[in-house]
Length: 200
Image 1: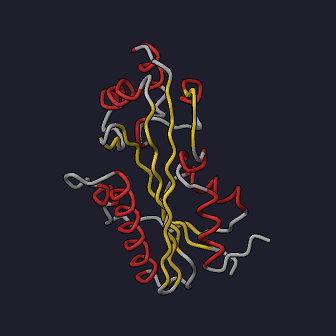
Image 2: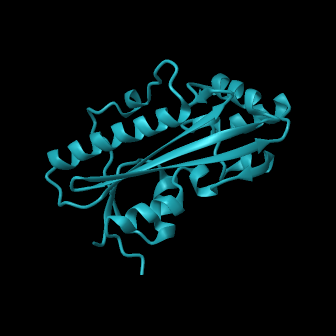
């Protein structure tokens, strides 16, 4: 098997798959699909349960898309990332003020970044969960506003991109750097090998 479908619009996930040497075809949502609606949070839902559920929903939607478009069969890969601190989920900010609020609450503390990844090929579905811990230095309001002004916060769980300018404020990482970016490569490679992707 020599390619997979990537059910994500994230350029970071594309970059990470290319790092693995995996050939992929994008399988983005259609114009009538509301991908963001799949990310709604349920009451009292744990971060791990949330990110696994959202990933499964996105994979279900991608499989329906594959069938509707009558595309050739191949493994479908989907992933979702969330940030959690003190039991609270930090999703994508709605605006710059929301992004600044998130960063103020995360500054000087250690939070978790959870990324679920799932692959389906035929009737076989496999999933994995990567959990990492990220510590930020204490951040002044001026530093937060300067970062938000770069635009990197928007569309990112927790209002930051680890591979961007926020890296200068990270004092410690415990876990998977690629998982924090949005696609944990060790877990992803293991799942893809299991469904027949050859990395040789």
